[in-house]
Length: 223
Ligand code: CA
Image 1 (cartoon, rainbow, N blue to C red):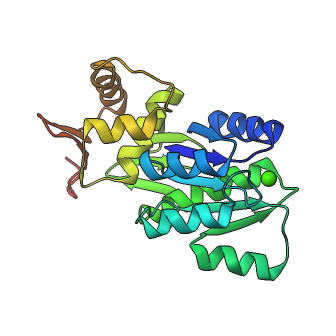
Image 2 (image 1 turned 90 degrees about the vertical axis):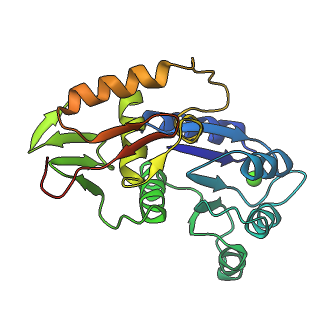
């Protein structure tokens, strides 16, 4: 899962980036509204955290432009502005959540996870796929109740496929959602990682569709 942070206060941005990365997200950052708008308009994100008071273009305008352009990722507004009129304006512009500063980092991370899950159509924090359980809050995976140890990168890939299970996820889509902009993954690294995840899962859950991508699915009979 990949998150965009648009915030002009460098220390806060760094703290958010670190917390989100520790929670398993790929993170891109922007320090002004113009760059933030551009990234959100052209890159693929599973969620965005958006400050309102930003240089160049203010947060409400950025949000409004994303929505006008059909960008549907969940957006959490993170701001010191706590008046209802300001909250209302943000929601009217297309915000999905609103957190006021100061805040608990843990709360922001938990809310972002919930927003991403909801946007993918999952109500509960635990995503089931046959005998597999993917705990999106705790970052844990189990098969028939037995824990499976995955690296952070493996979990990121599995989590994305699990959020979107039942449909084909292309290679480029997966790359866009599990790596940040600075990453330059080797073309076959994903195949290696997916093969490793598959081995660890020990169940036919990730299917390769040659030339198309991958689909996560376990038939109802559990085969
Ligand atoms: Ca600000």
